[in-house]
Length: 273
Ligand SMILES: Cc1cc2nc3c(=O)[nH]c(=O)nc-3n(C[C@H](O)[C@H](O)[C@H](O)COP(=O)(O)O)c2cc1C
Image (tube, rainbow, N blue to C red; front, side, top):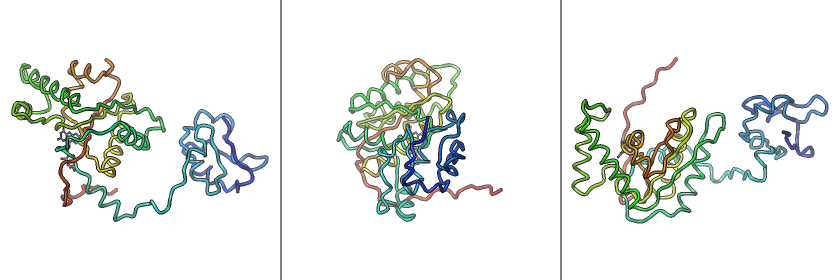
């Protein structure tokens, strides 16, 4: 694998060398232009830092073509105040409008979520998208079915107290959906267990991106618990019978209500060392 350096633009300043996470780039002895150090090709994680950091636009990488890397628009950079309000204003949405979410919108959100960091730039997160209120509602129904079966187990062994399951079941019987909140769409991020943090990070990006587009999300913890062990839920979601895959589901839809205030959090607990 070779870097394609534009020698008319490269200033041999070594910025790409210093920025490379695995130090696979060096300035070649002969002409001083950057290249991948022979023998270290396998350590390149194709993260694109060398391409993105070059102030002269001189770097190109076979796996991260410079023509696929748009410039960072200075006027779109958000300031600290904007970021703080945006982050503080994201809410878990539990009341949705009936409006469906179209596939293009979900696709756009997932593509943005793919920019979340992944361990070793593995980019192994993939997605399942469930569209349509009825399909999502069926997953809630199966989760309630699973809760009923949990309550019948003896001895009762589950992290949620039985009262919690009974409460969910009674809301369901009253016509509410405490599991997936009658959301019109749901996404599931998944990845092999060895990179199990990555789907969670991707979903965090997903929900922030959704907020910016006027959509709302909520982590679907109850469905997540059901899909870990209840075969009918796994089948309905077409999940492989493979415990080495980590899954996390998230509801998606247009919020029925607008929020007006920023609730306080507990003070940050920090141990300075
Ligand atoms: C891993 C995880 C699982 C969650 N599961 C559920 C859930 O099953 N149902 C629900 O209504 N909210 C769920 N939530 C939302 C939390 O209750 C919510 O994030 C918390 O109360 C703070 O509110 P906020 O997200 O609006 O700031 C979950 C959140 C996380 C991070």
